[in-house]
Length: 129
Image (cartoon, rainbow, N blue to C red; front, side, top):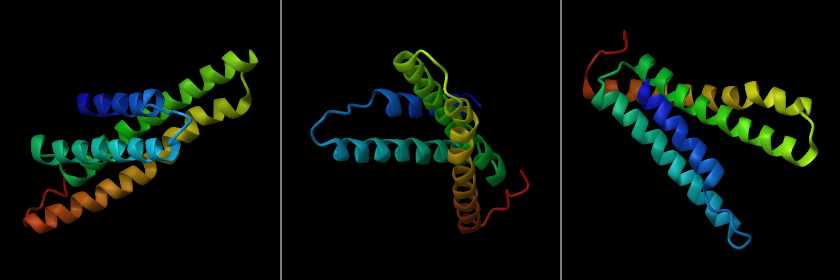
């Protein structure tokens, strides 16, 4: 689970502190997405080849990292909103649950499909783990 925490922190750093200048903002956002995608693939790679995790475990750990990142970004959004308005808007409380779920569920599904495909291509049967 250390890898999930590390990946989650990477997503937070990328999402929060990645350069967002007034010029070329679209390109910077695309770069942030690309780097986040690289973190996602690296996490799956580590779970599969480094830890020898089965598909369900790989998907769960990868989705956990994504959920940590989503939660962290929601916390930063909440803090920014409070700093601007001096009040906690209910939508930000919902985001503390919604952002991790909205990001982790698709991350789980994609990681599971990829892990099952890789396991099948390799001719191994690690789907029970």
